[in-house]
Image (cartoon, rainbow, N blue to C red; front, side, top):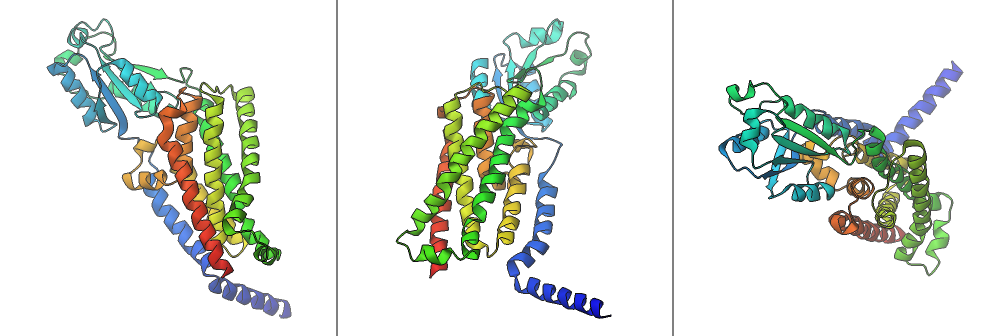
Amino acid sequence: MKPLSRIAAIVKKEVRQLRRDRLTFGMVVGLPVIQMLLFGYAINTDVRNLKTAVADQAETHLSRQLVAGLAQTQVVNIVERVASPEELEDRLRRGKISIGVVIPADFDRRVVDRSRSAVQLLVDGSDPTILGVANKLRSMPLAFDSTVRARPGVDIVEVRPYYNPERRTPVNIIPGLIGVILTMTMILFTAVAIVRERERGNLELLINTPVSSAELMIGKIVPYIVIGMLQLALILAVGRLLFDVPVRGSILDLYLCASAFVAANLSLGLLISTAAKTQFQAMQMMVFILLPSILLSGFMFPFDGMPVFAQYIGEALPNTHFIRLSRGIMLRDASIGELLPDLYYLIGFTLVAMTLAALRFTKRLD
């Protein structure tokens, strides 16, 4: 019985310690509940409300019926009307829309004779999910007259995939995977930084030096920025050699955006390290950031198809903005000037997170 009593005593001691450690106890109870509620509502493979622009060059009753029919499917969300297909291509390249609808001037005649397609869907084919949804639109009701729809001939709707005509999944996955890998490694490196200094007894030495909190924070992240750039080079090389994933845009633009992204993740990791008491707590908090960064960033599911509240959460995550940047530069040959809002967000996020981390570190020293 003595071994059992000793084991029971250890169990009792661990339970008491867990109850005193409120952060860990909150993670144990709150983390699964919050994630079940969040991801249960946010993750939806039935994609809806894809941002769509229309170039209606016919402007007839029948063309307006087509547009109304597309809107009624709720698969697309028509956010803009433009004058030409070239404007649609421009918005696709900049990531403003996922689908462009081209209705030619002779649309009514094409619908009647059915010798060729009457409408084109220009689709961001870099995401196979969006392309699959666009293909389904050809068989959905488009509010046409039944007598018109019954005529034999080619499909009324033609789908033209852009940026990934071969429909290869790695072309979509690798640019997003860059963000996931950098998020995981960069936050992990710095999330334990301050905690490790405290556990090793080095924090007292740093307190007695003339180094300010801001200088300490910057000094902590600079080496890891270099490591992040090396990781990016490795991922790009493997993606090119093994999966033939292109970099159609400027490699310099990609590295500039990646630098801002790495700095944002490192700053977030430092902020976590100022809140955690142990390295284990820091890693728990990192997981709380990592899962939303994978599931709510547009990496696995189209961002526009998520509920609005999930999109707000996703917009706060650095990975969401970097995935837009990486896919825009690597796949759509977008310039950094066309993607500035996402780059500005990463820079602003870094400044805010660094400031908060420095302020929290100062309070801890007090």
